[in-house]
Amino acid sequence: MTKVSNAMIKWPWKGHAAEPSSPLPWRQALSVPIFSGLSESDERSLVRLAEKFLRQKRVVPLHGFELDELRGTRLALLFCLPILKLGLEWLDGFHEVMIYPAPFVVDDEWQDDFGLVHSERMVQSGQSWQQGPIVLNWLDIQDSFDLSGFNLIVHEVAHKLDARGSGHTNGIPAIPLRDVASWEHDLHAAMENIQEEIDLVGENAATIDAYAATDPAECFAVLSEYFFSAPELLTERFPALYHRLVQFYGQDTFQRLMREGKKPENGESVH
Image 1: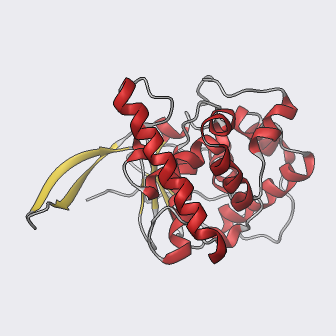
Image 2: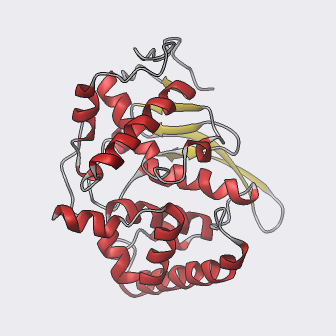
């Protein structure tokens, strides 16, 4: 059983009217590569969403993890980046974010093809429960502020957006019905292409995280990570799917980074 700290994060603007907070922590929080290229207007919109996010969601540090204001503001900004053009209501599927200091161990049960139930302990980086909390760890969160293609928060948010469409995760978020067949076609084509590369060069040498080949829900979540933190690679490998993600998220992340003169690369972790 998870032991939850009794000390909930109390943000200075909670309990007050919609008074703009000091720009200093937000400006510092925005000064990481993942937010590069945002216009001033988009930065202001992102900050407003993040402030509302911190008023609406409970952030629960676990196992002695200390979440100061800078970490909290960066956390909220990154949660809101995928829904910058969608709106905060797209994150209504959860009300609590739980943060471990490092990857955590969970008891997992699964059923095999013969109907037998197996139980095992697994190390997890994050979890997104249907109509439940999002569980994360700070070691991987701090690696989500660069442009490396890895982004734990975007991955788990993508699962929430996916479930919003049909109540379960299937790789197809809430998009117009007329687009579902072509979306599904392009997603499965990407999965097949990723698996072919894995078969050819191995998981470690593959250019896309092998987890994307496991099922459509994980493919959507993993490719959403690349969409926000390595869009150049995504446009090269899967241009049609990249443009579908542009339409869904309402953001052209590749053009945004190119205007800023930045290309995805492994950056230093932000603590």
